[in-house]
Image 1 (cartoon, helix red, strand yellow):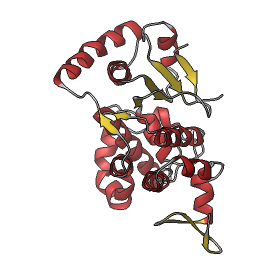
Image 2: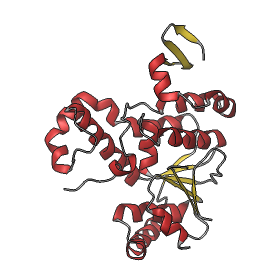
Image 3: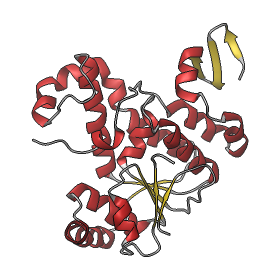
Length: 70
Length: 190
């Protein structure tokens, strides 16, 4: 991925994140392979929204994804 | 085999119904299923699959994001209890500080759709609605599922070929043979 400055990464046109955010959201994911399989607009929408909310390591997404008790 | 744990290369036959925990799983970072949820979403978008979602899934996603926001707002531990009364008490502050976050899942679905991804809501028709309504209590009784889980399963069974979920409660249901050709793809330890 091209870098704008020491700690900035252009993930897709208009999707620019810091190096630490890049690692948190996209680290370990083969974005280049996915980019080759997607239309540019779809790839941009993919990287723009995944991981847009900072979570926690001990979060159980199944347990919290439901309508809570009254 | 109607229940399988996701790994890259797992077939995701279209149309694919996404449970709320998958929508939340791909939106929120750091948790143990984040990578898998992103891999699934990436594969679906790359393959051109039709992605099915429901208002129930969006609603449950909003509760998840409200719960996370409540934890962050007061710097609470992840296992802190949260109920509708808690939400009502802190709703204004949650939206004041985390309003953009609260729209993350709806914005994601809208963004996918605007980019040309086939995103469809279910039930699609009145007859579909009636079929799902009829099937939901049957799954509650036969499988011991909660109303929400039974509704997700009925929506998937009625409209999809693949149901992606992080809920392991569906394993015994899938293995019981009740689901016919529907394949349940589970996000969890491989």
